[in-house]
Length: 132
Image (cartoon, rainbow, N blue to C red; front, side):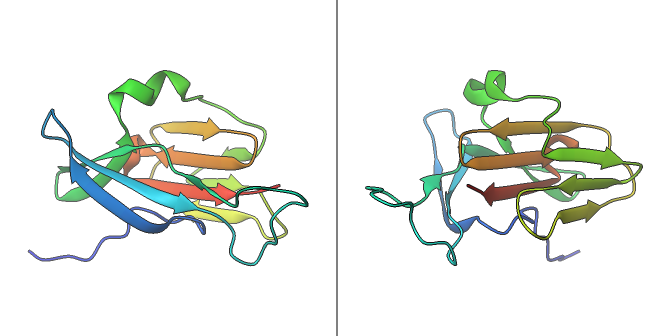
């Protein structure tokens, strides 16, 4: 059956592009930036690209999870991410982001100086956030 799915739930994942790599994997990369934020004083750039993610389908669900080559960068915990029963709280701004699901089996986090990417249940959901 046809279904509409939105595996990316974060506020800063814009204009994603996909391509097939040499291993025949479908890879997606998005632009990360908070559009309401002014660039830092003297900055030569605004925003960044997300970690390359492989798109797969499992049991009818679209999954996006970092490519194998980048998985060593993922963490299990971060002070900006808390899990409470079946909810993930992401605290990167004035209003915390909350994702609810039936169960949370796995959470992986990629954090950089201004970016946070959170992957829930092996990519069933992801949050991309830019913060300062």
